[in-house]
Image 1: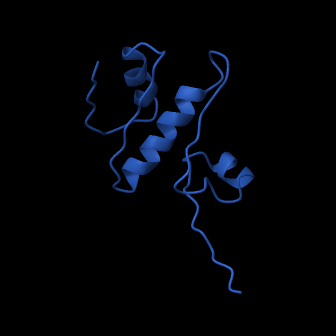
Image 2: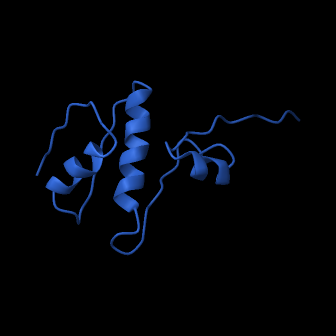
Length: 87
């Protein structure tokens, strides 16, 4: 039986990728849960920006934070992306 090596998806957060032994498993659904201010939005935006760097199309779906917050969060990472909001 041959073992298959699965390429992990990097998160854009080197320390987290190290803890996860290279990143997230591809093709899985991940849910971020935590109290306000715990870094959920920051982690999500870092992950999306890593995808943008790799030429991927990305989408952020959030149900609780006000829309303008995402622009401020991504500005902290010097995002040079086209941002579109849908309400």
